[in-house]
Amino acid sequence: MESLGSLDVFVRACDCRSFTAAGQQLGISASAVSKAIARLEERLGVRLFHRSTRTISPTPEGALFLERCRRILSEVESAEAELLQTQRAPQGKLRISVPSVGALFMPTLADFQRRYPDVALDIDCSDRLVDVIEEGFDAVIRTGEPGDSRLMARVLGAYRRIIVGAPDYFQRTGVPQRPEDLVDHACLLYRYPSTGKTDVWPLSRDGRPLAMDLSGSMVTNSLDPQICFAEQGLGIACIPDIAVRRLLDEGQLVTVLDDYNQDRTTFRILWPSSRYLSPKLRVFVDFIVQNLFPL
Image (cartoon, rainbow, N blue to C red; front, side, top):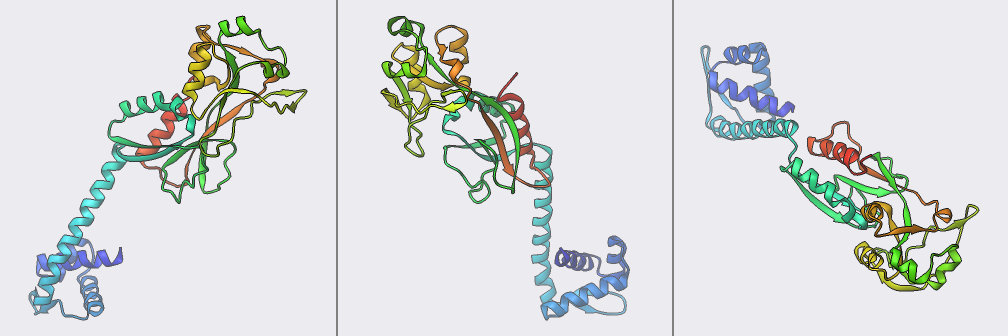
């Protein structure tokens, strides 16, 4: 910044053809202008001005340097104006990462896009543990406790994995009364795309987890097939409640084994710690906190 200040002094002196007049424009003394030019000449190793008792004029080297300085200062001015504009209105690309169940968030993200059309969302759907800063993400949505001190976090809400099936399925097969009854049922299982491991259903008795060896009639790495097969009466699935609220409200799915299921998972939004948030990130964080899990 000190170098830019020297360039500004040089350009003013060229325009005014006087150290005194340049100093008056800049609010400094003629002596300060003269010393700034002398330091600049010493650093560059060239003489920038012809000096006389009444006026100054650029040397050939000074005239060449002047054109470059004008461009540099113009670029700085443009950059400052651009930054000021970004502080006024949210805009630009926003790179975010959401879990593989991110399809559940898409209606909220679509609402955000409608509200802020100048913000371009770059969405990564993955269960892997991303490095927010090293991979250049603006924000991520994840479960569990945050473990990176470089990140800020806000709680978005919580969901439960619930065990559901269609009423007509239970009319045919009976309702499981105990976790052990699941061995006689068609279970629609979920496989995590990032690890290939099958989801363990959150069943417990007296506070102790139950390790159930479930027989899967179907395995998928996406929620949509689970929901579809369960709704069609083809088996029982363990699904986040936020994914099937409408189907539960309409009676197309019902829950079972609730007394053995105390599951609860918290979602958080995390972003790199900074004293200043860009407008696009600030409005995104606020919007997601207010709208992802509406009361």
